[in-house]
Image 1 (cartoon, one colour):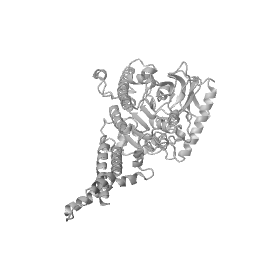
Image 2: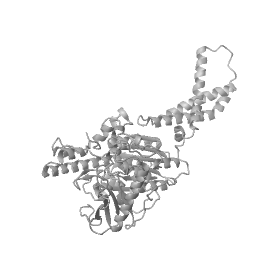
Image 3: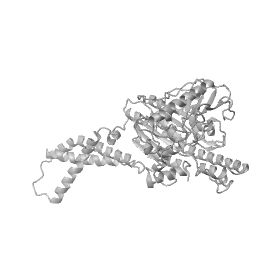
Image 4: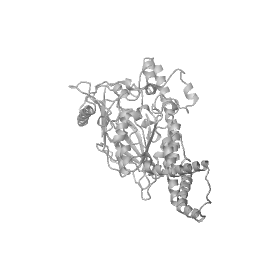
Length: 560
C-alpha cells in the first residue's frame, strides 16, 4: 500500500509540474489573472492524469519489494513530506473548482463541447466613427481599406442609429437593449453634464448582455478604452476578463500612449490565444478616432500645413478658435477634418490586424463579428465640434457591418432603419440564450424592408436636452425644455436632406412622428425619474478620482 501512495505522490507531482508548464506557455502579464487560472487548470489536469496513471507506477514499485530497513536521514524525511505536500496540493485546486461561480470553475469549462455549434460573438466598436467616412458608405478617400474588405463579406446596414450622441448612454443602450432613460443612464433634467461626469453608472439591477451570455455558457471578455467605460460605471459586469486601458482601474501601469489602437489589438490577440477553444463573447473598443486627433501615423506633411500651436480638442475650439475671423475658422475646420481622417486610417489599420488574427486562429468563419461605432462626430456640420451636444445625423448615424457565422444567409446591403439597441437581441439569438427583461430592440433583419424601422435617441452630455426620432420619410428633433406650451420641433425630410439643414418644423408635415416623439420623450422622462427620483440637474463631479478627471479633461469632457 505504501508503494501505491508513493506512486500517487510521484505521479501527481510530475503530472502537475508538466501541466503547469503547459499552462504557462501563453502566460501574459496583460492578463495575469487569466494566465494564473489557466496555469492552475493545467496543474490540476496534469495532477489528475498523474493520479490516473499512478496505480501502474505503484504496481511497478511494489514488484521491487520493500527497501532494506535502515535509518532515514532527517533531510530525507523533510524532502518526503515536501513531496507529499506538493504531490497532493493540486487536489485543493479541484476543490476550489467545485465552488459555485468560482473563477477557476469558469476556466475549467473553457473547452467547447463537441456538439456545441454556437458561434463566437465579437463586437468591435470604434469611438466617434462617422458613417460617411467609411469607404463603403460613400467616402472616396481610401481611409478604411480593411473595413471595406470586411464589408464585402458582411451585411451593410445603411441606416443604423445610436441611442445617444456620446459614449456612456450609447453603450448602456447597446448592452441592455434599452434607451438610456430605461437603463438608468439619463436623469429628468434640462441639463445633465455634471451628473454624467460625476456619478452616472449602470444600475446593478439592469440586466446586461455580458451577464446573460455568461449564464448561457459563454466566456466573456472586454478590452476597452475610454474612461467612461470603467468598472465603477458598471461596464465590467458579466465579464470574466475585463480591461480598460483608459480607466483609473489600470492605475500607474499605464502611460499616455497605451490607449492607442495597436495596444488594444495586441492585448486582444493575447486573450484570443488563451481562449480560442471555447465559445466566447468578446467586446473590443478602440478609442481612436476620438478627439484630440493625434494619430501616430499622421504624415508630417499633413500636420506641417497648419499652425504648430493648433490642437484638435473640443475645448480648444470653443475657448480659442470660435471667435476668430472666418478665414481662420475655415482653415481650422480643414485642419480638424484632415487630422480626424488620419485617426480613422490608423484605427482601420489595427482593426484589420485584429480581423487577421481571428482568421489566423481559425475563429473567423464560425464567429458573428459586428463592427460599429458608439456615435459619430460633428466636424462643424451645424457650426459645432466633436459630439454629445446635438442629435443630428452626423452624430447619430453610425456604420454597422455584420459578418454572420458560416451557414447563415443574409442580404449584403440593407436600407432598413435599425438601432444599436438591436445588437443585444441579435447576439442572444445567435447564442441560443434567453432574452433579457426589458429589451426594446429586435434581432437585426437579414432581409430588407426599407419602409420599416424607427429609432428613438436621447441623453445629451452638453447643453439643453434634445430627443429625436429617425424613421420613414422624416427625422424629428424635439427640445422638450424649450417651453411646455409651445414645444420646439425641427423636422427634416430624410430622402432629400440627409445633412439636416432645411428645417420643416413650422409646417404640419410629420405630425404623427412629432406626436410619437413627444410621447417617447414624456415616457423617457418618467422612466428617468423612476431610476433617479432625487437627482435634478446636479450630481457631483467631486466623486471622480483625480486620475480619471485628468483623462476626461484630456478628452475634452471636462473644463479646466
